[in-house]
Image (cartoon, rainbow, N blue to C red; front, side, top):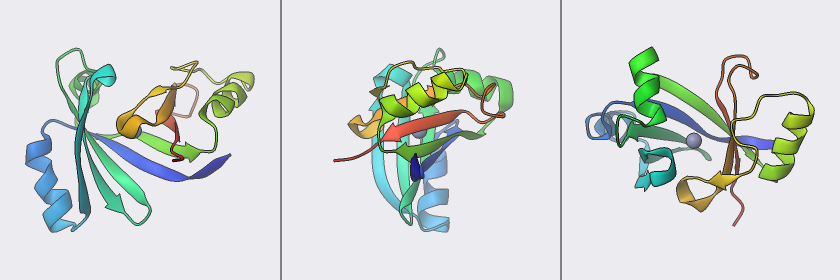
Length: 134
Ligand code: ZN
């Protein structure tokens, strides 16, 4: 079902502060920033081979990222798997009793269909299923 790791999401306090680390020290290709209103985040993407690192900065205090950082501090926030069909993946997980955050795909960064699975059902890892076919 999963084709590859799409990206690893990392919660950060400041994109401005951390971008130079990923771009200049690690030397990753920076592919720009984007605000995802729906999730109250500003994201920055870096390419690593054919997968990516996604830095997430909260745009306000109600953002899930602000809440995550307040609780756990900065660090790895979620793992995103690229799947062939997001709705099909959701249905499969639902059928297996996995707790869903999204019962239907919503639009994430890059306009892709995404859905999150609850970390309580996925052994502690907030998991995103993303459909990224052009
Ligand atoms: Zn993500």
